[in-house]
Structure formats: C-alpha cells, structure tokens
Length: 124
Length: 107
View 1 (cartoon, rainbow over the protein chains, first blue to last red):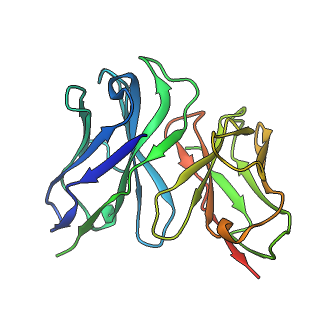
View 2: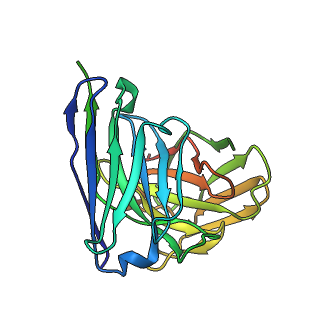
C-alpha cells in the first residue's frame, strides 16, 4: 500500500525557512514524478511544484519560484521542499502527492496518492 | 494560467439524488482534467482521471465526462459518505490549476 508521510512543518516568522520532507513507501519511489500541493486555511488547493523521477526536471508555481526548491533522494524514498523567504500568505497545509507519471517524461498526470499534510504557519 | 471555474460552489441534495457539478476551463484542455474528493480534515482523493476514467476502487456512482473546455462530474445516487468538497484540476498546461471547489451537503 502506498504511504506518504510529510513532516517538517511548524511556526516560522516572516522571512524564515523550513525544510519539508515526505517519506514514501509501498511503491517504487524512484520511478515516479512527485508533487507538492498546498491549501491555505479554509481555501482551495494550489499546486506548488513537481519533480520528475530522476530529479532532472523541476517546475514551480509563480508564487513560489525563486523562494522554494524541490528535491528528492531516491535512495531514501524521500521528497523535500526547501521553503525560504516565507511570507504570511505561504501559511497552508502542504501535501506531497504521488504522480501517475513514471519515467523521465510526463503526459497524463494526476495526483493519485496524497500524504496527510504538514502545516506551515508564517506569523510574527 | 488556465482558470478553472466550478459550479455550483455549494450544493445541498438528498440521499439518492443525482448531482452534477460542472467545470469550465478558460481555454481548451483536451481531456486533461481530474476530479478529487476532499472530506473535512483529510487529504484529497483522486476519483476521476483524464476526464472520464474511474480511479481504481472508486464506487461506480461517480462518473465524469467532457472535453475541451466544458466538463461534468456526476454522482448518480448521493450517499451520506459523499459529504465532501469536490475539486476539478487541469494538467494540460503548467501551472496545474484547480477549480475553487464545490461543497456538497446533505439536505
């Protein structure tokens, strides 16, 4: 069974940083693209970033580009999101999600498994 | 960015009712459209992918249709456990974008 467990969230002051982690199990992590999706309190879903299976391709939402960095360690089956220069409007639950895409390229995508999320609160 | 407009934003229906949610894309997205269910306090769950394909393990009362810019999501007979917020999501172009959600309630 696929299992995704996020960690690393917490309370941070504006301008601060956090490193989010997502430990994966139950599937061949190194084969699949992975995503981060966030949800501000009481709001809808916002796609944040994705990375292909071998880490050679990354994409970001405009709202986080240049501040956030996605990475992965396939040997540890773990996905990361380094969040820097955090702003109040980055406050959200951050979910990691497994993509339906495997391999180097992605044509038909869906977030087919999700973790339980980790909460990030940016406040002074 | 592609804007996804869902309607209605909230929906109250009785057990056994047929309910329909629509999702309109701001440009042609072919069939690159997925539907998710999110129950309160839980992570979203994939129900329908590529506009009309039922994800493994999802009850057959859920279905999706459409292509291009207009899509529909149907629950053929609403059940109490279907209380949730439903989201459409396009993956034709980056950034992937979601509809604003449809909150389903039982009358």
